[in-house]
Image (cartoon, rainbow, N blue to C red; front, side, top):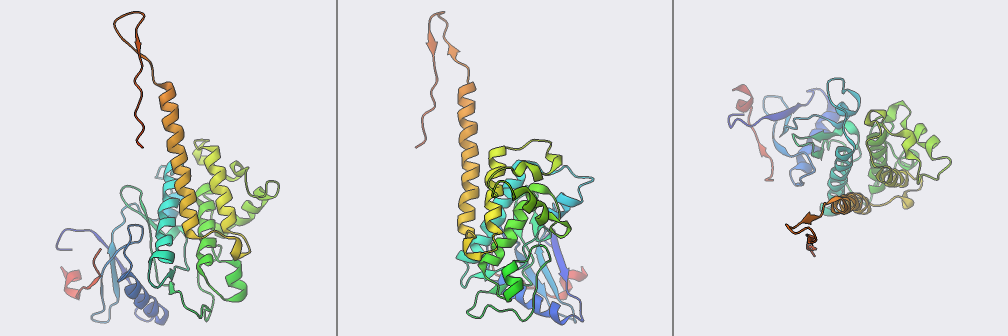
Length: 299
């Protein structure tokens, strides 16, 4: 753009009726949804037969590109994966509990999670999203195979818990770096046979981590993901519950690291041979999108 800002442009196929509907959905929803873990819509263009959406540019691309197309990229470390999970959970919590009226995304998957320079994650692609309504039945099934809630498939009814199911699949995807369309959930169910989904998730963990992960955290997140994919929607946690669990995982890690650092802290000695002093740490108790005319793209 003339301001020097780098942007991403999504161009709609001119002969796509479904694409036209999804375009209108994104413009309408993202015009009123503002959260640090949602991709921001900068503007849109509908002139000269063109339909374009202009977004904030996410320089590190999609989560999927790091999980499956990483020949020239370092594998995501465990810490980054946990923070990505929390970022996505916070974005969905906002859609479910912060937006008025609530919004169901309906297409949570790794290719719709975008990463910025600092590897902070944002939820993208709201073309299939729906405002939560009394009539929650879709005319036909939409979404991505491998992420679809079985309850939605059998009844045609989508709810917030449908997003929770997809998020559970995404958690397992982060853990295993295995595509849901290539047997991930079968892999998960085999691993859960003998432990009721509570422990033993080391069996599916991404080998590229080379053991560099906290087993307790892995099992806590695995157990959470397994609750998310329960075939009974009522047994799945809410996104608010999920955010609390993931936040607690990171807080517990911080507490363990702090305690370990204090234990390893050497004693500082004074000049006198028999004098020892110990230092004890004190306890410490975006604007609505504007319509952008075609001349922006002709510069």
